[in-house]
Length: 373
Image (tube, rainbow, N blue to C red; front, side, top):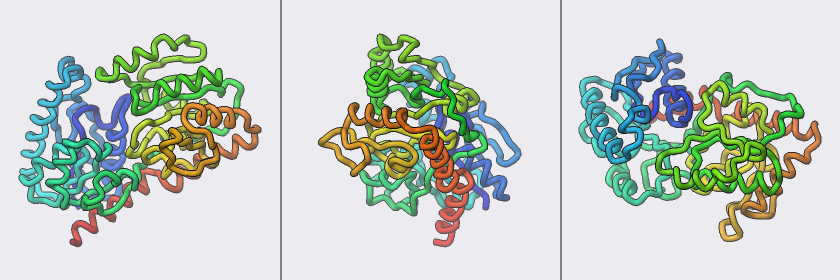
């Protein structure tokens, strides 16, 4: 098949530091190319060119590194629309078996200009009202959800199937040693309300377990981050900023648990899978996709966010921050053998369900299904 993959404009493919969608697009381009498909990757000019795919430049460089577009939200929005128009012009000049877009709802508005079959994978929640208006206008296009829970807000979209995001587990070596220094909690995500950054700090302070925060802080989240600054003492709470991939893997491996108490309907949560691949269990609220990804009591612990928001019957009966604290204490109270077994469970769970190879195979099936129709 000849396949076009359209990536977002904010980050490079693959990303150098923070980036979830961008890793998925990279693994898909790389994996499909290795299987013999002709893959044209539409991405920013500072993205990585590899033999498995052709790179078609959509924007000269990722918007985030631009000194103006990286901080001015309205300017960045204008740039996205401009570069999207340029991208569609390039797509019109080619002939594809499938055009697979990962660059969000904006692409839908220009989809009538394309005659080749289109598949949409949206990597954000489907609950934003103005976006829902656009999705409703293009509800008959083929869609893939990245979790079953992602469908709840727009169940009438033409979903072909759910394909879970996958990672190259070779990039996340399994770590089975339980050393004395592996005694900290880890927060890896954007530092904002949605990811529960302040809740993670509360848990660390209440349990007196050290917490390392490796986080991207967007301009829009500065005020939220400022609330965390007084708590950063480099003893209980350490802020590392954004962490490059090589260092990120080491932090995953040596953490006692990943603590990201999501406060929104997380569409997938790549940090959960990355952490478990390294053998590190996850503690989070049972929001969004987390009950589909984490096996309660086996690869970590799920906690209901509040008494009013009950998502399931989990091992931890307390809710909110109190429930998270109990989950943390349970992780630390495990015997060495119990904890080692949980780490092995984590790795096996990812190997079975969340590899890039499995993701590529599932998307191949979707492409074939669309072409058959």
